[in-house]
Image (cartoon, rainbow over all chains, first blue to last red; front, side, top):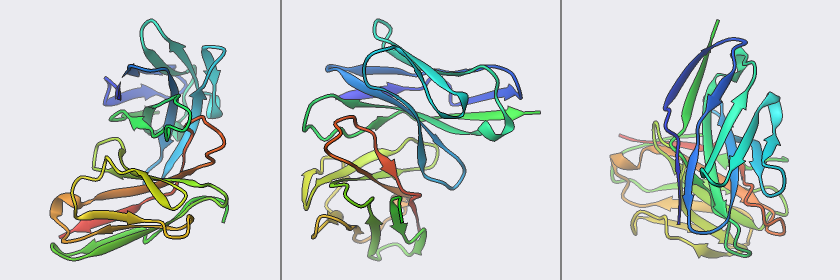
Length: 116
Length: 115
């Protein structure tokens, strides 16, 4: 079984400032890691994913995340945010077991609010 | 359409009524998932289909909840004797099972309100 912890429920930030959204996970098996974004009244959209290889992954809209196995973390970062980045961000984990269903386990989400 | 389609987008019902929510996955995606997202929470897994069969229904909260996928494409989530606590957004997602990456493609959800 896996679990995901997003310690910050809300993160206010000014436009053009950098931001980091924190994510820690727990799992007894190797995992894949994801960040999804949810705009108001919309479904979840994939921002980026870590499957293997380089621990720094880049996603859409200028976001990136770094996988740290020793700290079991997968923090999301953006060097300069825009008003349009205001949304709910979810970190998620799935197991790597072939044929295992790969169901995602989500964190409780972080509301990013970008202010002028 | 190219994405996951869910209907209805909004459903308001009274306590005790029966509700059906429909999901049409991306064409060719044999894996289909239902999640429930309560206000202020992350999505919680309900059930997963591989083809026509439910491969994992461990997330269904009780026997009032049931889901089917008779032809391996469209799926229907059925809720009997609805309760106010069932109010949530029900999300459907699909995946190409050949890609063992866990990436799911989500629909926009069906918002259920039980009065």
